[in-house]
Length: 170
Image 1: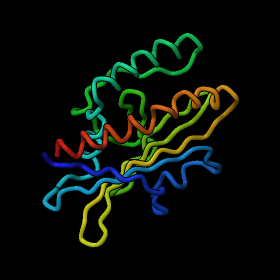
Image 2: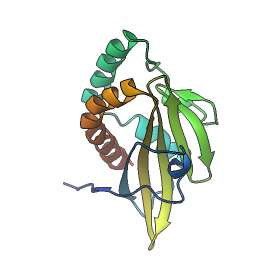
Image 3: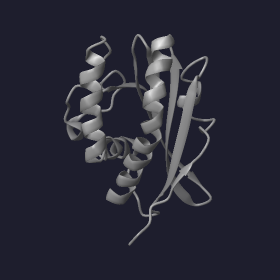
């Protein structure tokens, strides 16, 4: 059985996520090594990441959407990820393409309680190819802080599980 190592790391300084907000209230970042034969570009890696949610994550998102709709927060909308062009401004479920570079796509959303960004960054170092998934959050008010107390507990598990599934499926 092959083992996929997901390493918690700091947000890369060259990342769009690092400059996403003037003040970052929460951040995390995870990195995985890609196969040296991997010929994926940032668009295909981003699509793979977005379709790599385990069933338990999909079910949690459905519960989240039901609950937050009661207090007027944004919910995700279904979309066919394989057919989406990842152009600035396009939407994919709960994410909107905020910005992009040749090796990075910055997804996110702004809501009344908090704003978040998720970066998918492809990079090479020491002859190895990496994908780094970074999240940054800016709280707009007390509701954002309260909401994130709950979300933070599962966020790290969600991102690392999706990244592990993505690498496994490459």
